[in-house]
Image (cartoon, rainbow, N blue to C red; front, side, top):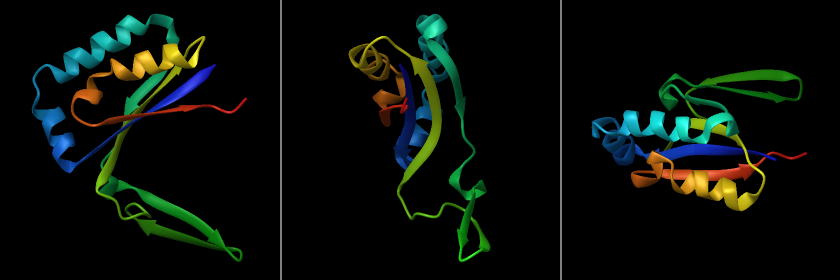
Length: 110
């Protein structure tokens, strides 16, 4: 089954990740440790660079920035494939982001 790990954190956690000299090497080691279970992974641009798209009554509405006011930043994602939810939870638990921010685990619907 495929699982999406949403990499989140508030501004303080985001800055702590960037300031931690071991963070990026740890992320690379985490990804390498997953081997072929890691389907895709990547970081996202800051929320200020987002564009929100909505269609209401046939009218397309574009808004700069995130639609929802939130203190949390969606910083990235990892798509993994694991045999069990427990295996996916272990991958989330060991993700370097869990030291500073939040890793939200969601199974993809079949």
